[in-house]
Length: 443
Image 1 (spheres, helix red, strand yellow):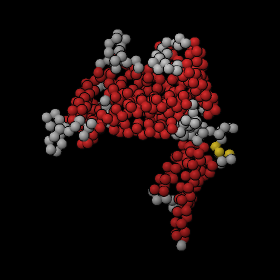
Image 2 (spheres, helix red, strand yellow):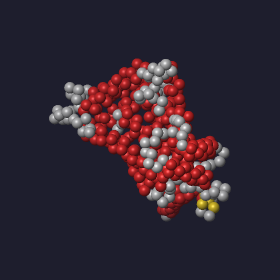
Image 3 (tube, helix red, strand yellow):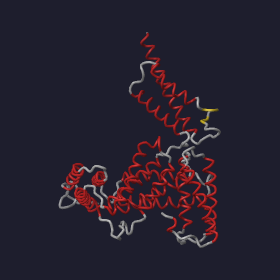
Image 4 (cartoon, one colour):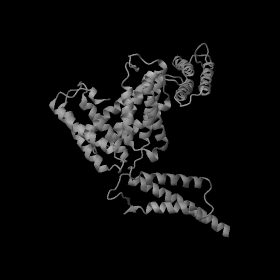
């Protein structure tokens, strides 16, 4: 991931483009770090247009050179596109093509890891299949809005994701129906053990309980095979048996090591633990604390550690490969972290960060009003006063029907206004029901 590790371009024109892109990337990084003001659409679009122009120039220079080796220009361009993609999410333009770039990067990473580990279930693939389908719609509607060079680049990345997904789906399809639930249960046990292994306080009891579940599944086999009621070996029995044995073996290793990582791999482990824990907190509080551009630093650190592997494993300072326990523990943390990044990206709201405080308040109000409605409503109109006062105070923030920040009209006006209208409607329904109830009592 370190750009100095890649050679500078030999072509003079490419060197000029690299200089311009480096300057743009630095501006994007400065804007990302500035917490004194919210990110404005016009500032992002200015830099976006500059990057798109550089993409056009690169395509013209390299026309017909499909097998050209990557150089520093490619890496800096990738950083610019990744940052811009996260900026589009931050300003609420989540349904436009540039926002798809970071998502395709993360999906591709996850698919590569699933393919490498062979530890995945149908649920893992269903979510990504749904996201890829959404990205297809975004790309189809982007031709008139965004540069054809960018749309073409995204379409190629999208195809890579689709191909990886179809390959994994095909493997799962080879499992006969009764075995799929067993396979999914084993995946869950394996991941739960890996989670227990990376907790700050190791619990042997928790791992032993999971190990017992795996052994219960082992006892259902006949002569080492999974069979149906007629005694016939089920399709995919060998594959699930390998997973089961891996599960039991991993439980024994984890119980032996008790969460202790050797000193020579401790620094990597602590970095990955820090990233995993930070992302876990963000996944709980994202509505109030996440700025999507923050994900860039986590991605870069993860990519750097992931790409430092030699033949799938890490080497210590003496060139010795990590033992199986260390390798699997570090890989679990990396994959878990990429999973959190993916979740945070797909959870990004189509609202600018400038309007997020209002949007989040309305989300909370809507939940409260729905809970009141589902629990039987209110006994008097007076009980609705706190909700009504809050809704009217938010409504009064609008100028000519828009939520303004200074002279700016941030993205996501429709989403916030729609949510406000839903809250008013819920409040009105509760009010009418309360008035009718009061009238009946008086009569």
